[in-house]
Image (cartoon, rainbow, N blue to C red; front, side):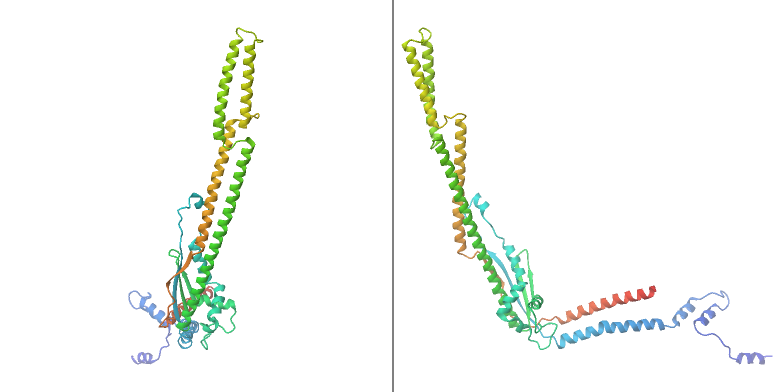
Length: 417
């Protein structure tokens, strides 16, 4: 009775294979909990799934990484170590100093009229000048920048082209000449890179000479401006002084007074005495009229005396220059005091302008601004440029970042479809 069973057992059974079979086997009844999917079965299913899609994506990522990151970095490294020439640097640091001239004679007028120049502004001008096309042309005329930076036989990245125009040379200049300016201390630092240490120092020496020439030109221009403005102030002060003197002379001619204060004091004393005498004569005539008639000889004599005193008072008023109608003594004296004050102020301004002109000419004989060199052009003993490992690291980081962003964008777009 067991033969059929043995035959059936020996007969091969066709069973499904693959993940479906594993899931079916996991669901097959096997005692308690039959029909339940076990965690080990799910893990086996996921492990045995075909990975053709993942492998294709991985191959694409690896291929693009090799083409876009690894290969360019290797080529760039080979160029830096096999082709790029060693470069040497030269350091230079200086600042602009100014000699301030303090004058004890300069008072309030000097503080108002004096024009001061800022040294910080000169340092900023010099900083911009070192990075400009003007100094490139001047230094090229001194040391021949084209011959210096065309020395490598083949170095298209770090050397100057054969037919470089002035614009190209200016751009290349800002690559090899690094200028920094410390605003607080006013120190300008320069680091120049060249293919030989001697060339780097020659370029820095040329920069120092041209910067010194620019500072001298600025100082000379400031001196000329100071003298010119001082001369203009002196001419204006002199013209104002002449005008005030003429106004005072016209006043004296109009009122016939040399010194109104002294003249008025004296004339007022005479007028006061005459007016007192006139009052006394009027009283005496009134007393005579109390007991005699107007035809009396004594009354007539008193009247003639009164007329004489009145005429004298009128004449004295005319001599004062205030005999005209509507003229007040206080107004005349006030006008004179105003003219005299203006004359004194004009005289003081003229004296100060003359002093400023003398100081400007004295300052023009000396160098008010000069270039103080803190670090003279140095001569390098070791090549520090180009910084190969830093350039390689920057290139690798930039390319890897660009590659990663490109892959993320690409797969997001593809998966969204």
